[in-house]
Image 1 (cartoon, one colour):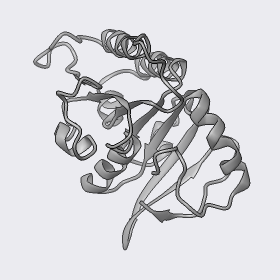
Image 2: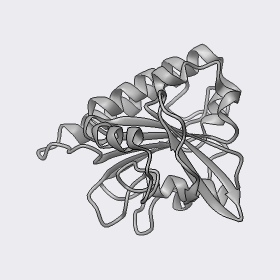
Image 3: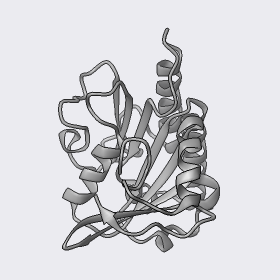
Length: 214
């Protein structure tokens, strides 16, 4: 995925092209789905977190089964950077850290967003990037109502800072259809491995773009 939320260069679907710049300016949240290798999923995550040579504020939320941090952050960006926040979530009873619940995690993410947004230089549209690369783990270990509340708080925080959030589910979108996807997410990115990694983008009211190389 390109840095400004476009599916790829050369996409011709006018409804998608016309909407994406507005989503970037106001803030947006994307659901990323598809059964692909870790290498492909991690590549999509790195791209959605933004080019390393452009000023970004990045928040990464990892669960028990998430890949290592170094495989998720863009090349040259580390967890020690002042513009990066990494949260490792372990639900209560699983080697628990300071986040014993999804509510506590949502509060921590919101506080991090507020911290970045309150700095002397105001955030521009798309400057804040949030990634939850293992949404599947949250869905598997919590009831759907709790996951929905967590996503509502997190997506609202991202949009409030005019940021871009993406949430990776390692299967087809239909597997999480019990969530109100069209209300939680502004767009959907599908991944596949068809000779090489590919992606396509759709919006709640538009059909998907053509498949293009990731």
